[in-house]
Amino acid sequence: MQIHVLIPIPHPTYPGPDPPENIYHYTTGMKLRSIINSGCIKPTTAKIEPNKKPVAWFSTQDQWEPTATKVPIPGMAGQIATAKAQSGLVRITVPGTCAPYIFPQLPLIAGTSPQTYIGLLLSGLALGSNPDTWRFTPTLVPTALFREVEFYDFANNRWLAIDMAELACRN
Figure 1: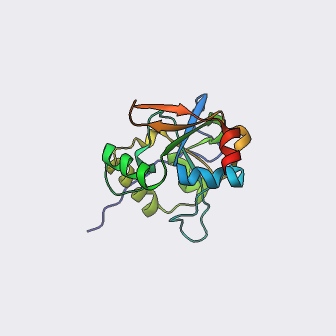
Figure 2: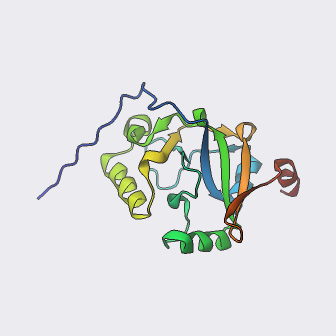
């Protein structure tokens, strides 16, 4: 028996709801180094189907995005393991206009297949993420647009801003 799922997809010229003032790209200390060295957040090519557009992912939520965890352990334990393995957790704040598209537009903008779309949705939900907070862009987001870069401080349960100029000098 086959189950068919209908996915409502907004028209691609409609960018979705008005973007919030800020959105967040969640990554790790190791990935931050390559972002700084390249001068931008690049659309990811990981797990992208052939002939489909890669996208860069962002979130409207100001807490760690569960789908950014790099180990198969849910919750805080996964965040701690990711931080240890990847030199910390990082949150990059950019203007909301940097990622104008919402998750339901992924098939039209990036050409994502329905199977992959559903897979991403189910995986995100299983990790405790809220797909309503996901935003994306198929374009580069230059470091010049970064409003703030922060590392997560587990001891005090808060994000701590870092000086980008100092960080660039260390790389």
